[in-house]
Length: 369
Ligand code: G6P
Image (cartoon, rainbow, N blue to C red; front, side):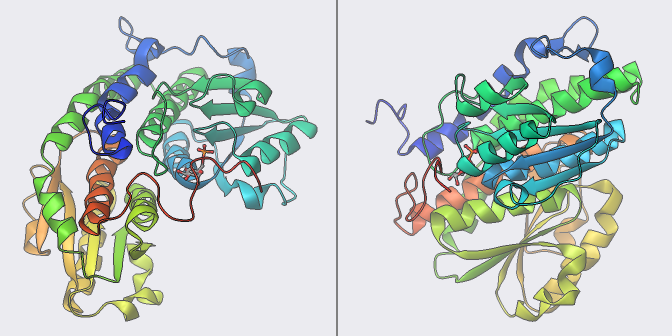
């Protein structure tokens, strides 16, 4: 079993460390090195058909849904196509508003999640084109969708998803760039800039993995803690949700992710002396506002672990300690931010002596409703 885990003490830790590779494989041949653009040869539909979509639903469960939240912001930013993200167990019982120009994207690591599959089947009954992002060749989702983009993360065994998430986010970046090329909403030079930065991501993930000591210490300090908050704004909020889910799943610490600007409408009442808050401040557009929100929780006694981009000299003044992330384009930062968050949940689980790979009450793949 140790051999299967590649020398790591758990599948989760092994899979966390496989992320540079998983991300590289998922980009793989989809980047045209010479022209610095995205190619998706696996798409069967023509560019003309793709260009007509003016509305997208992203439907998924759990961590895959959180990847979808990053995808929403990126697709909207680069293509100006409105995107709605929905939890599959809700979506399948809704009465969604489909038009001839609606595309549905389903995201599923396993390709077997019952609710996601049911939502896919409902959409197909209404003649909506479904594009699947999945990690398993031959899975039900892969077989039944009209179009498939595989993530090439390799088998994921740990219940808590890690490398599947980062690979899904990469697949969504590639799809968003491709759609932007087809629709002409990004100039060739803009696409080339993103492509360049994307190709540096695996090395940046690797550097975050090498440097886990600070996050390990913070995780150990949460041993007696009952509740922990993750806050962020815009893309940082999407990543907060994933950080919070990961922590709940394997450490059983109650946690909430909150859009930081919304704290004052209720959740701020829960902040008192020494409550740990993980505050993500990686997005330049909203940075000043985020710092004000951090000051608000700090003033109520919170112990704040901030996340900032390297070179940031301000955040350290407002928080207890800072984790610095390698610099990249703001739209690409989520794929880096999530790495220390995964490690935080992993170390918190280990510190409590829990079974990291097999959390209570949870299954890797939920194939019944
Ligand atoms: C389960 C797993 C999660 C996963 C979710 C969706 O709850 O424990 O890690 O995110 O299912 O799975 P899928 O295979 O559809 O991505």
